[in-house]
Image 1 (spheres, rainbow, N blue to C red):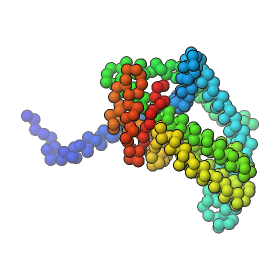
Image 2: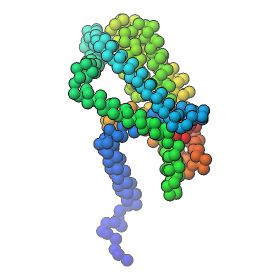
Image 3: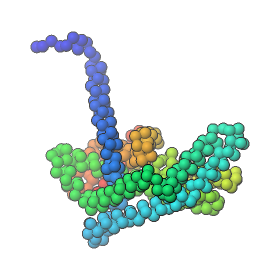
Image 4: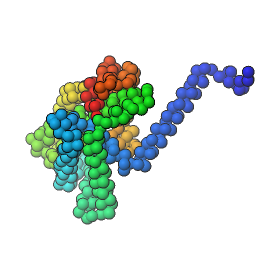
Length: 384
């Protein structure tokens, strides 16, 4: 029998276990960092793929309904993609038009609010922050105006990248909608038990991501409509632009609602005075209370429910890695990750049933959402 290395017999078992776990964590971290680096290097292909996956998660029920009505899968996928294209084109037109027409007015109003706050409260921090935000918004408007009106090379390059990525995302969306039903059989054909477990993992992640996207979109539409009605009644300038800002901000939980509400209140304060600003604040708070106490529990209780700490950390991490786009995409992926963790804790990541349905649809119902960070419902989006 060979002698043990010097000192090994004196190493406590707990310390050896901690060393093994540390090595495993370092290896996982290195692999994760490599994957992130690879995604950043291939971002012109990865970003359209991610956007198409989110679009499929949102529109898959419409494509399936058209197919059940008798349309061929290719035709149903094409019509669904056209609906997505029309929605993107219409929303993009409204957003750009509101930005071009009203960004200057909103920036001036916010800057004026900053000056008034500074004059009345002794140049406190809120006024300075408002002025900085106004300068940033004004700079954003100038960049858009310069890119479109003067035909700058950078603006054309950015537009070409956006158009190319958008076309690629639409094409990928069409093929995923048309051929997505073939992927489960392809994954399940892998050697057992890897095929069944990988398929169950993919179904769980997709169901969580689809539920989050549909729930967030419904909440965003309702919030923006309520905010728009309130701002129009109060005759706040730039109401359409502010409503678009509220809709986009809904996809960045907590942070987006706070920023869009703050801008609306400052614009009302600068243009209509303190009384209208107070009423605008009341409208914003009322809409947020309706969202938090009614819309979120009713709409997203059947999908996913992430703890606020998890959401904030996901947003911060995504913004640090990929900026605004990372902040927008971080929460859906966090929802998918925590859904997988919740199902694995309850033994839900086994092999799926033979009929292609998700055998673990109800596996995570007993999870403690406050501790695990997530809770899944019926997972109706997992059939894609």
